[in-house]
Length: 545
Image 1 (cartoon, one colour):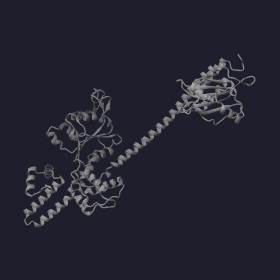
Image 2 (spheres, one colour):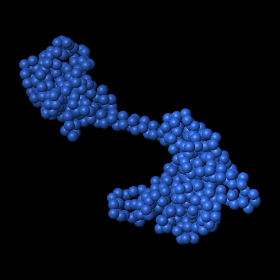
Image 3 (cartoon, rainbow, N blue to C red):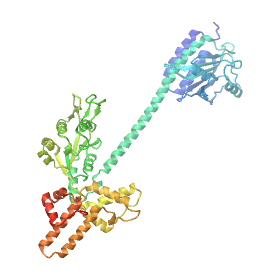
Image 4 (cartoon, rainbow, N blue to C red):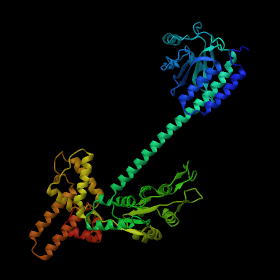
């Protein structure tokens, strides 16, 4: 065995010692430098480069260069393309080594024509270095994937220091070392990537936490009592009740006509109470058929029914820690009412198809426009559930009973729609405003909101809202008032005056209820037959009939 090279046993000992050192390094650049130094020790070469495969797997990027002869390292070697014109680049020694996964051992690059060594020739010319023997070794990880290439130059005779070819007997040792080095590089890359992912995750979590905090603050601000328009005495009474129940878990039953803002009150109770950090989940009990509503509220296990391919959490479980708002509770099917009662009493829910119950911590707020006592009499609502829900009732007055709030509500909605449609906030003509204030809005705030949006779309820019833009059923109020005044001027007795006044009131209610006799009779609190008789006596006919 020629003693100018390390004996195989010595090389193996050096390999083991180096492998231990590599496993302890935690800086990627330092690790790559150590790999080149160690490879040069094993092979007695005076120069070496290392290339690493990029994430796109289309280039080998230069990372480290060492050269003892010139005394300087090359800092900027161009990346090696693995593909040229979408074909594998077999002309470059490093590229070929990466694709083949084989060690490439060239005794003399100036006498070998199998590869394109133009870059090496140009580099030698610039640095004054004379490349001769070259050993290209693939860096393959434990999965057999090439992640880079180690390039070694000019094996040296330890005695004469002359350049000689790399001996074949060292190829196996170098290959084993390169595999160990590749694993160390791969692990380091994973650690680096994990650190980067952890940093991204931490930053994302911080961003999400801040966004959640901003959202909670925004919601709390949006549903702050001071943001809810209601200066009337009746609404102040509602606010007083809401404040009393904020920090309790008592079940709240909100009563009120359709469109009067029951969900807004429910959200205000949630976002101003001690459960504000928990979720607010709303479900309209009239929006789904019984079987769908049951699975939506209670959830189900896979196989509970046809189509139940996966487990699904119910809204009650999702709302745990927060508030579950059940709108239109009066329309909840009787079969589900019994299960809801059990949830309220036991504080646990059993998904469909499950034999186990899940403990939940929810605060239930229910709302209805129905008279639940009447539904109890007709056996459409459970009496025990009613008393469990009606722990703390809150009655929301209809808009007709809080006319003092109309100007503030009108201003609020006009500003919203003016911003939405990029226009100026319009003003009402005095006559149009009088009619709006005279109208009772049976659809309450929802009807008012829809009316104001329609008016914003109807009028031209910078034009006031005139009477002609109002719907017929509101403009008819004007004619009703004029009719009453004219009749009053002709009335000569108290009886005639009373009849004229009664006729005007009945006509006004008929107009408000769009000439629906049943609703009008209910509003006037008289039998429908009596209403029909009075309409005939006063000759009150719907226009066009």
